[in-house]
Amino acid sequence: MAFENGNATDIAASPPPPDDDRVALTDQHRNAVMDPLTALFIPAGNAGPTQAACARVLPIFDGRRRYDLKLGFKRIDQVKVEQGYSGPVVVCSLTLLPIAGHRKSSSLMTFLTEGREMEIAFAPLVGTRLLAPFRITVFHMFGNLVMQATGFTTRPATAERR
Image (cartoon, rainbow, N blue to C red):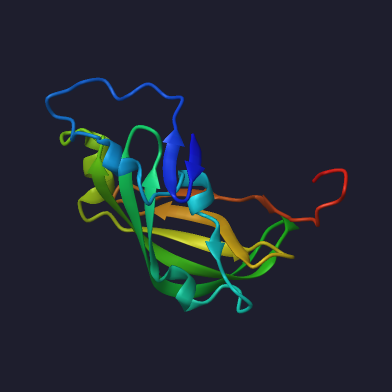
């Protein structure tokens, strides 16, 4: 995908397969959006991981679906990984709000939207004013799904890497 001024302008993905149950995706759903990867790099300003970092809704377009990720402040945790970062992370609640391109009867969509408690922890990227995802947790009565960084390091850009 290519983006210009917050709009998805060029997409090299096949459209979702037709389905009577699919919520229609229109050209309008490509406007005022972010791609799913860069959307999760949250501006932190000079303060680092604070409550303010969670006060946002991320408008996501992934080429086939349009959805919002609504964040809300939960707490500040301290983390330490074997390789890299040690310090505070901001933990935000995470709510998936489907808008278009999804199937209404999708079991995954139902699982992620019907009262499911989810959270995402953001850690600072040293040398920047950005926070990056460190841990995502989906709580479930049968067990929790946790995806967490096992290494989290940054290094300054060099002339060779630019």
